[in-house]
Length: 214
Length: 263
Image (cartoon, rainbow over all chains, first blue to last red; front, top):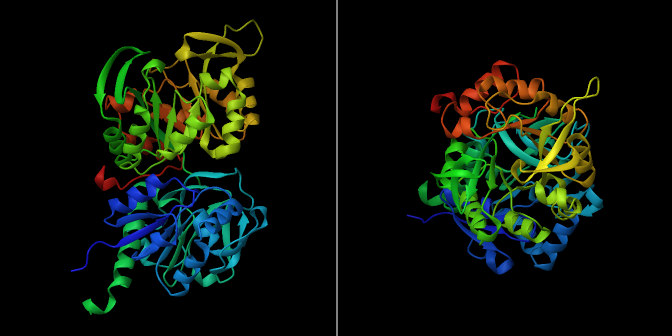
């Protein structure tokens, strides 16, 4: 029997760590906070949280030596979940102050188009584009909590999992292999959010111990 | 489409939820984190803690309350009362809150709103406005004055002007309380709400006067509010959050409804 899935949440000074660490613990994960590459050692998955602007976030990631280890982690196909700004940083660049990002996914982060209010803050419905295990047990159109003014525009449409409408529709969830991204905050989205995090932990558990069970 | 929010508000003194009439006859109503968790399960879209601890008794108890709540209730959390500086706001956000609401401190030092918004973003800064109706003079338009210290002190600020100014100073949301209606269960002051909501582009949270689910509908429909806050009707279990949301949904308002089966 394997122990709990171990998840390293990257702390680079751009996120409130309390809610995300406690939410992951609430769905059964063992959570460590990683401020440098050493903190990633032994983890089954990485969570990249974040609120705020892209450019300073990249500076902080670089200062803590996390950029290359993170790229290598994803290149090796290991599980990683980006939340809000963390999701946006997966892409090549952001229109927000023209910041360069991690380049793990093709595309840019762009400002929300035709949004009646900015930032987009509050509970909005997440509409499935395709079925994905991240949303198992979550009704299509469920409400999740958003706080942002930008969202990624992936070059590859096939990675889009869900969209949300505030003005024009934007990508609110995407997945490619073991790389998952959410524009909303599951750690602030009550039971629906916890279900998505539980699904992520389940996916990590499946990836961490594949052959034994079969 | 963005949902209209229903927000229970908890008064907290010395780390406990209290109930009372304007700082008097306070009774202990339980643990804030526990109550917040219960409301989150019942469908609260957000929780507001109003710290009414007397200033000289403050010893960081609220930070501990926020930390414990953010560990258990996974919904947005706003803290009002007692925050007077950028550093104090940083501590509250680090403890797990998403927003801080300023009232008396903002009236005393309006630049505090700008300083906090520049540091943490507009989305994290709420201006709470306590407004009281002024006697109407003949054909003049209805006016409201801003009051502070829980209504015990008057200012010479016009509530609508102050709301507009607060938005210019950088706040991302306004929490508008009618002191005429607060605690009276006679419905929200929709005239006050719409006078403000139609003049600003940030969300307005209606507060003061909720008696039943219909009042929430009226606050949104007539008051143009984006969110509705209430305290006693939820605490005293007169109405559930689910009941309120059912009424709002029946009136055609977009709300986030939790599974009916668990209600």
